[in-house]
Length: 263
Image (tube, rainbow, N blue to C red):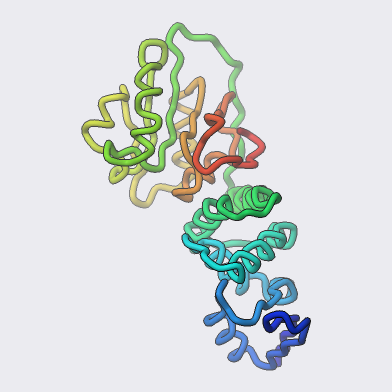
């Protein structure tokens, strides 16, 4: 029988111990724990004991869009210190969407080290892609072109979306000097926003990341540009690969510092 132990703080009365003596009760505990829990539980020992079970819970807690109370803020900031432990967890495909949400929303913490957690999530993604046989491709020598290819990897670019309003005018200015190609999901672009691009690459419904990387290598873009990161799992996975010579992001990319070593 597994026994789970940790500390918790009931309000301001000091540290106490929590002990969960069965797997079934532990699952119930994970089901009901939240950022707003009255008792602020330290999930560190739980993560160490059962990382595959506890990591998705941590990512779900960090995916909260609205954190309104001091209790919730303290809990979130505590979770953001668990990066080094998180890096050691072996993740599955099912975790990727929740991971991308946590990657995005940790930016809204007030902690000075909030972006360090992204670095740990990037390590998780690198380990995941390596496990699936996806490696940085061998790149041919860089050759200057008269009109370089700028591949825009966009998570959202419909004309009524903030990403289009923010970055559409800038990209339009580049059309004279660059061949603009878009990589995005079919539901993330419309006819108006599509007019900016010479071509659009849509991922297939069941297309693996390995095939996507193959398409991009075949395209031979001179620059891969990410206007945003954190709104899709595929964007984060691609940003953590050295697919081509230059991966860039605008300094004000949403949502701020990506901590990805290839950008």
